[in-house]
Amino acid sequence: EEQEDKQNESKTTQEKKPTDPKSNEKHEENPPSQTPNPPATTTPTQTKEVHPHQKLIDNFCELTGLKEEKMAKIFSIDALMRLSNYKVNDMLDFYFSNGSALSQICPPGTKPSETKATHKSTQERKSAAKEVKEFKIPKEVKLCCGHVESSLSPSSIPDMLTLLEIVKMGGLHATHVDSGYGEFSNGTFSIMMPLKPKW
Image 1 (cartoon, rainbow, N blue to C red):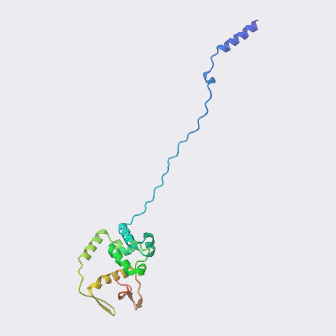
Image 2 (cartoon, helix red, strand yellow):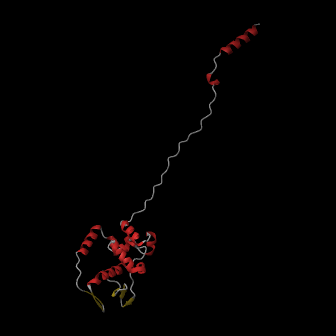
Image 3 (cartoon, rainbow, N blue to C red):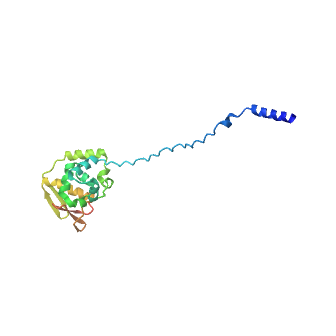
């Protein structure tokens, strides 16, 4: 009987023992690990360098129907603009007057840094333009070089200045060489001058 009483007491103590509330709760599943998205890396966009005379180039391409990429393979637009005093009308006249010879006068790939004209500052260009504006065409000009002498009419002076500028830039090669002198021709007239002149 004593053993039965002890067993009954142990049962009652087990019943009175408080149950752990956590034991009855269902174990929640571990939530999926949420890793923060890495910050989006933005690659800097490389902006195409705009030509300082891009508007003039666009006007020239629009009037001639040429594409700038194709034009760059035929002749140098920088050299053409330099020879035309950065005027679209003069560029068109120079382009249509010279035709296929333009690739020799203005070789493709000539960069502004390779021409002496581009080394001038803005102030020098303004002063040069002012000098050209105030220039008065003389009645007659004589060019003497060795055994060649030529008289030009006033209307031929701009063509002669253009020819000299082309020779100075190295866009025209001598067709005939004689004792350190070379003959340069643009199709209209020819001049004989030293192969290494002092400009």
